[in-house]
Amino acid sequence: MGVRFKGWGVAVPERIVTNDELSKTLDTSDDWIAERTGIRERRIGGSAKSLGVLAGKRAMDDAFVDPADIDFLVLATTTPDRIAPATAPMIAHELGLSCPAMDVNAACSGFMYAIRTAYGLLETGNKRILVIGAEHLSRWVDWNDRNMAVLLADGAGATVLEYDPNDTDLLSFSLGADGSAADLLTCEHGGFFEMDGKEVFRRAVRVVVDSAEKALESAGISADDLSLVIPHQANIRIIQAATQRLGIEMERAVVVLDRFGNTSSASIPLAFDDARQNGRIKPGEFALLTGFGAGMTWASAIIRWS
Ligand code: COA
Image (tube, rainbow, N blue to C red; front, side, top):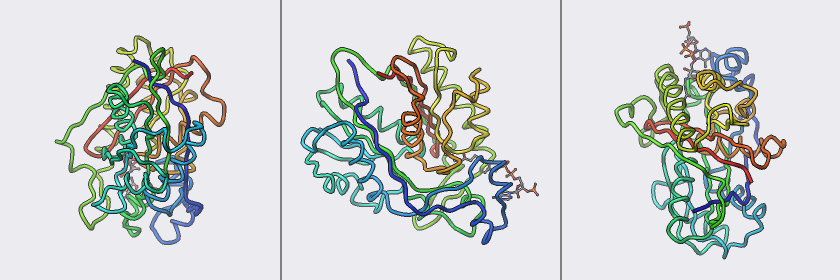
């Protein structure tokens, strides 16, 4: 069974918030944020729905598909506009889709979980699936809390996945979840995101390395065969530590967190789109997509770009 990535689209709010701007109201600095996280600025605004609609529309245009061609919409979001209804049906409505639509919440692994879900749906008879990761994290940030305010941001990314009987872009997956770590990164109803940053950091490196190794093994390739790593964009130091342990030079990792911060389930498609726009993904080459997040959840996949 084969699956192709047919098109990509992204959307970020226009409003740019720099580290210097945050430093005006928080006890922090551009130097601290850049050095400890790699983030220099982020985009703030919109909603999961509005950003998801834009990214989804752009992915459908890029794939040259009409609304009637989409059999299912899977939206990854940690920050739905409302608890009920899910945000996916509202996005589907705006896009003119008449297919089933649902939200998937796996925090910052959400986009990879949504891709895995779409893969399963394609295996069972659907032809084309729109996968969107859209987040409005800024709504759930206490802007007086420097721990979270410097990290989280808003954005969306999307792709159209299509069944192909002959060949595949998606070679393997390795997903996991560990609810014993649930309290490390939380957002209670009506509350704000809170995190044990050090412990999340430590575990993130471990699960990225472990799931990447499993995905590589099941794809039958080694880390040396990878042209590119497209990681979740949480902290440059997590990306550095994980790639180093995998024996991959940083030059092969795609980094967009300097411009977009941590956009949770939007971060991998934002990074993927950046790599694609800059000609960093070439036909026939292998890439590792890998994410981790609250839950804890994690997910890696190996793709061969066509
Ligand atoms: N601005 C300025 N100073 C800050 C700060 C901020 N935003 N946050 C913490 N500090 C201070 C601390 O008070 C501490 O000061 P001290 O040495 O005087 O006690 C110092 O900086 C170091 O703090 P520490 O918490 O050890 O920093 P860190 O190097 O662990 O970095 C994170 C903090 C949150 C950036 C880091 O732990 C991290 O990125 N963790 C993973 C988070 C993540 O990826 N979450 C999303 C998962 S999807």
